Image (cartoon, rainbow, N blue to C red; front, side, top):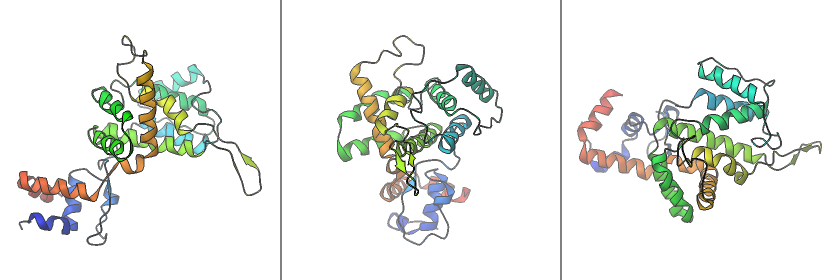
Length: 269
């Protein structure tokens, strides 16, 4: 039957189906038995998790074998082994990275892949907009970053979130700690600031790799890139979530402008 604008927020089942159809969330976040009226943020990511295999495998390998590796992403690697791995991934092979694979080689492969993407992870059209947030502060900065993230294509959004989660995990192991027996567990020394310095230029690119002046960033841009990536790492949990208020706003606007779309989406599900 017809839905009034006022009733949209109360129709938990229909809302779930709509949001799923609109690809604002993963299915596991749209559990049919969730309590009626419960307002929960939904992730920005589409239903199909679109992360390149090479990125996910590299992140998983380092999370499993390299979190305690001192100077990861800064220590040198074997160019020959990195090139071999990259060629295997490029050929579509199901590359298995195990404990025998050098963590530094895998780290170099991840950086290289991100650097050489035909379109950078944060599209170049949004380069200036993202950098402009570096001069903002507090909630205004985070709100603007979130709106910019909403503009990313699904594959870029998913891959960026996977990377940011990974970098946050690496940063959590930057400082040394001690096990229950009192033995020191060395930190990897890669703080959020250090990671942003390493990855920032690979994620936020003004020019394509190899183009004139592609590596000639001025100091202001370099500092802004690092600061922006720091914020993305530190706040990725909240930045990639769609608030209940925004969910309802999307549905209200759709109901007002395209009621047929709502009916179609519900039928499709």
